[in-house]
Image 1 (cartoon, protein in one colour):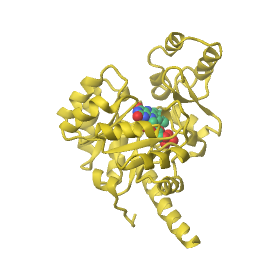
Image 2 (cartoon, helix red, strand yellow):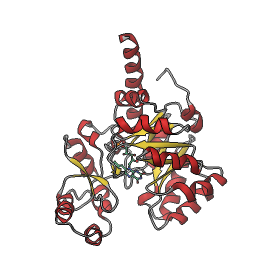
Image 3 (tube, rainbow, N blue to C red):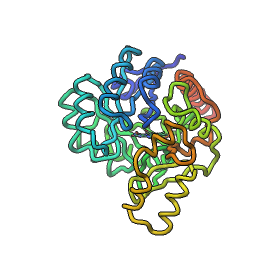
Image 4 (cartoon, protein in one colour):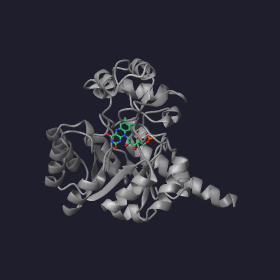
Length: 318
Ligand SMILES: Cc1cc2nc3c(=O)[nH]c(=O)nc-3n(C[C@H](O)[C@H](O)[C@H](O)COP(=O)(O)O)c2cc1C
């Protein structure tokens, strides 16, 4: 692949392509992160579904599998957070993407250890907070995205330029990006890189269950919805579990009743064990456009080539 680009993000992470593979529970372990980093983009291990000792094992395996930089995604809402941070600093992880929480406390602690910190936001207000906390960049994650999301439902098309205007640190766009053309649109709106989740969930190196991947390939427009808005909003594929959540919500159920339905291990059941009816299946709207499981390196290559060709095509049209 030729035509490299250099910007603040490629320099920050020492990567060839301004593409980041999103941290994803039950999906992005060391195999996916190392494959992406070896392909010239940035791979992230998703710590959200890992006990601390499992995270350490994934970090070590990733390090053995790539000489390139890789990072860890750390949702700030789990009880083992302090243990995770201890492991990240002991293992000298250079990059951490935090999400789902307040970056105020943890950014400073990580930065003191020399870690590059990026926080995921769903509004320009939180982007400013991340900048004030000392983050090196922000991920602007739109309503289309898979996984947990903001309540405001701001789409990537609207969010990216708003965040870009609000902060001076670089903006990484996420939500609804699974192709080079979508990446190009994000750059036109002010992004300096893209964070891609759903497309990499359908990769050969992803650790999620093959049943889940097949369901992602089968997904059509309208098959996902932002659910559980009372608790922690999350975009889900519509299955029996989703229907139960929906029924409770329509009946005005309390947060406690929803927590009881969620119980423990729903996400593991769905995405890791492949129980398509009783499990939680997190994926983005863009699943409607994903039709194949590919090697992660091929996803990086195709995305980049389509981005470059699209850019040239646009210039010719002017
Ligand atoms: C299966 C799945 C699991 C996810 N888990 C996490 C997570 O653990 N932490 C996080 O910050 N975001 C998580 N996300 C969101 C992604 O990091 C990313 O921002 C999002 O997928 C981008 O939108 P896209 O799916 O349209 O590419 C998850 C997304 C998916 C699809």
